Image (cartoon, rainbow, N blue to C red; front, side, top):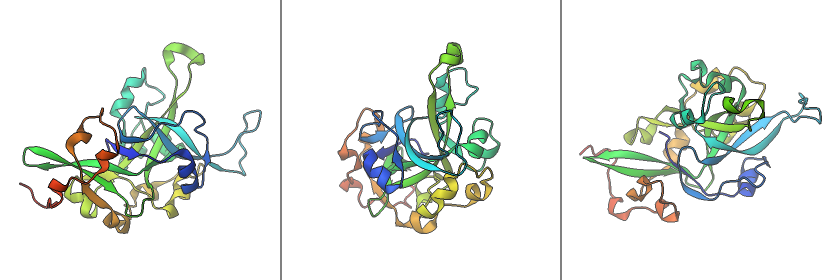
Length: 252
């Protein structure tokens, strides 16, 4: 967890929802019902704007949408393949893990999602569920980002901005499907999490997601078509009526 999610809103909608500027330019990823690791995704960041000389303005902070590669590539990595193994960061250990600790202190973000997929074992099979909010608003997954340049190409290497989704112990009804869940942040915690000047976010890392938010989520059984990353379309989000009566507590 979290290894797959859906992101179908255009940048203009996300910018309004997260009170952010759209800085995706022409690089915004297309509507994606089956976002998988290493794909381009949209994240929300807050940074001090820089002047023409590259100096940051300490008195102003701008929240914006940026395009990133899902799977954090540490600055010290020899190649970008390591990112495929770093799509998630455990919130309990991120601050002390070499790959993530600098990002915890300096580069935090939000990853908007319509919802995410998780699989519950049902006998020998695994039944996919789509976890989504009740009101159509995006879920805000806490994330960490960083910038990597290919050392083989030297100082002229183009920057690759990548991101990992923070996870935490599943609470409430989500624990019936999987023991982990993305660290979901409610709007009242967005500013604190994104604050570029807050280098100690221990309390934010340790605070569990809102139980009220988790209990409001719809846990929707969906088709196993989502298992194949090549499948992508609105049908992936449709409720699987054959599994509509699936009992989450059934451990057949």
